[in-house]
Image (tube, rainbow over all chains, first blue to last red; front, side, top):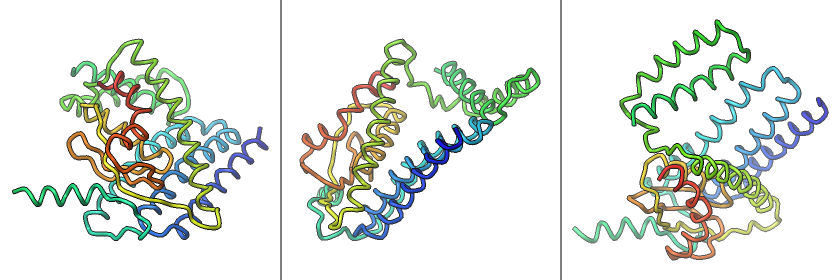
Length: 111
Length: 163
């Protein structure tokens, strides 16, 4: 039981490490948020399940922790991305389309 | 509407209470009911959960959404990890517009959160019934194609639960 828990905690930590690596390797803010949000969410879930197996008496609290992470992590990344876009954060050269900027321009064009 | 909000708040609150306490005793239960009832009374007038539907069909749809969601979450992590460790960063990003049929705020919140946690997509803004999504590997930049690829798999179930 403890062995399984330790392995799960290790997998969670590896996911965290890869998400940190993604922050360095991705070219612009939006892509960094992508790696940051998803990997930390699954990393926290797997790490917490591992801790549940090692310390069964913490299960209730860890389940609540997972719920809060899953509910709030996407919201905070959404807010950061939205704020970045409206403050004019540049997107990388590889970007193939930007519907949000076009939409805003359309709005300004029609009084 | 208000009854429904009160009921859901109390049930959720009690689940949290027992999760934090970690033991089932009469004293814990009684104090929990009092605390949760006071907390629920504060936001009953907002009717946050008023749009949630109670029916066997909604329950099955919720479970189906959960299964799809967990599957997509794992897939998205493998996808992102492969992108991160591949020697050349393979990305083809774009912000695309998609349309949703969901009408209620809670349904749209659930949809936006689901989209953010699925492979390579990040909700950037919501305007009316359009969601603007940053897509790390955009295969189509027109509204119909993007809607089909991103929104369709969640919308079916969320429509039943939240309307």
